[in-house]
Image 1 (cartoon, rainbow, N blue to C red):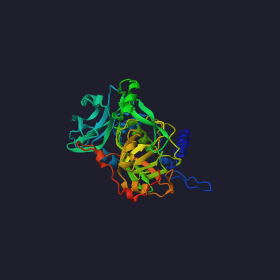
Image 2: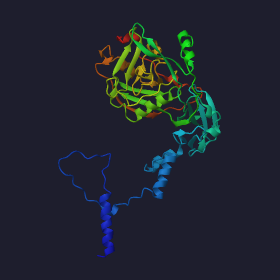
Image 3: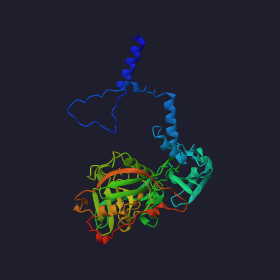
Image 4: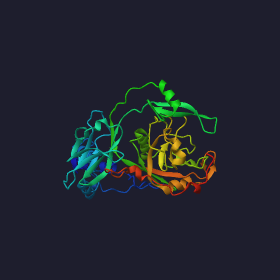
Length: 421
């Protein structure tokens, strides 16, 4: 046998051995016997393509630009290509741009329109016949002066396509103004928020008006850039049912993003609702609280959030951040309000950042959990958060205010035993 043939056989055998790998979908079962390696047909071994080869580079480029997995079947890719779509070019954009999205027209060739829509369903701007890489600052006037997040919707004819993109101006929240106050029917004091920047929460309160005289005006707010991302809802799966949460980046952008990120990355999985207070001392609907992996009420993500001046009213189904007495102490713990009557007093004191659009039965079922420790709101059996995951939010259309989709309770206050909280 010639030296060349021997060398080819040796290399072929080596490639065949090194190419063998265990599939992540089929992990090996535990065993006390050594696994027997099956013989391989080395003639079917393919050489590994270098990571920096033109072939790999092109496949990665197509994946990033079109969100197409190069390993998907051709039939699946063909279906994706036939539909028009829109994707952000990047998450963060500088204040003067470019603020870009990638728009794929699709196989029909019908012209596409972009609509910038606020939370009330009002159209703030529009761009027609768009495709390819589009700088929004060049086609939609006024987008550079947004004061709060808005939604960018792709439309073909009168049909919205896919989930909207959130256009969020990056601004520092104004300084929080506080004072010490006494709790009702108690001698205990707490830190009460009375204003933001130079704006009082209650302009008719004479004590706040007096305190305003000592407030030092800060620098005027500026836009440090934009955050641009696909709008997603958070699906909370519990052992009492599912709750679907729509986030409100227009009210509390950093808080909503924090919750979305923790949910996406599995922080809340296998945690629970460690505090259940179906009614306050006056019998008014109050809260169910979760988000602590330790289930003690003392756990968190290892960091604290700056309190944001959300104006979303606390009402049934609204989700808000729990915190300690210090205003900037929220982290991961959240609560669902169970009714306006008992939670209106939380407005301005806690940061509401979203609302449930489905799952009233799950919320009411958790609120009806038997309580082992009434003083602490400790359930006898803690309702479990099985998983949280992100799902695409529905399209935004003119004249539609999604806040109208907030859930309504399936019970009345009289059906829930009040607690001593």
